[in-house]
Amino acid sequence: MNGVHHDWQYCCEALQQVSRSFAIPISMLRDELKVSVTCGYLLCRVADWIEDDPILDPIAREGLFLKYLAYLDGTVTTKGFCATLPNRDAGDPEYDLARNLDRIDRVLATLSIDQQAALRQWVAEMTRGMMVFSHRVPGSTDGIVALLTHGDLDRYCYFVAGTVGHMLTDLFVFAQPTIPDPVKLELRKYAEGFGMALQLVNILKDVAEDMARGWSFIPRSCYADAGIDVQSFSDPGHRLRVHNALIPVIGRAKALMDDAFDYSVRIPESERDIRMFCLVPLWMAIETLKLIPGNDLLFDPVQSVKVPREAVASIVAECQQVAA
Image (cartoon, rainbow, N blue to C red; front, side, top):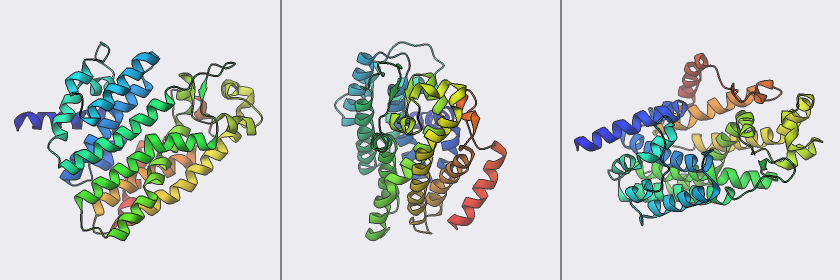
């Protein structure tokens, strides 16, 4: 038991390392949900590391995806997965997370069978989608790996974030089985939009950082409609057109925010901690989205567009009013 306690401490510290912003709403959850949601989030971040690591070559990345899926399916142990990891010096929090998967797994084992199954199912679906998109190749003329169309962007966002909406819904229902069946169906209806809305805001605010590593989640069709191509992003002379290229993605994010809000307020009022968990990142995303149109900070890969730290307390206070 003492060992699991230390593993849980590791998970809490790792969560702070990989996402301080997401650690805030998780801290608002009751203990049982705090553990299950933390485990789910950390498992997702291991998949993120495999997808995004700049050093992995395509063959190594594919092998890690497959080995991680085998772990999630229960056919490979954490030791078997970790044996395939490259040898690296410590320092990258997400690599450290993958290296310590056994510690997450021991905390995961304290959850119910249904909770474990839901986490494994949805993280596996996320991982399979990431693996599909990892096979995209750079454009022959610009060397940039870019999504193609609005539909392509929606598919990507479903895999990396819509799945999270479904995973969270399962965990919420397991934590409060008295939620009426019609409400469960309503939550399912808006679950994907909840995850995808937050993901689109991340894509928009991180556009320069992604371009710096040769990726564009803003589809080529958006740039073409603005009269430019993807590589024009780095041309100061085309900044107005780049801002115009982002407008459809901003519009899609705004539309999905409505789904995200509908998802949050359909959680019964008695489940205030779950409501707060949903509303705080949603409000943060809404405030971030307000800062994006026409903001030239989008072109700086070091300074991302983000809500000032001093505004977080007021956002939490607003969410408390809505959640009540």
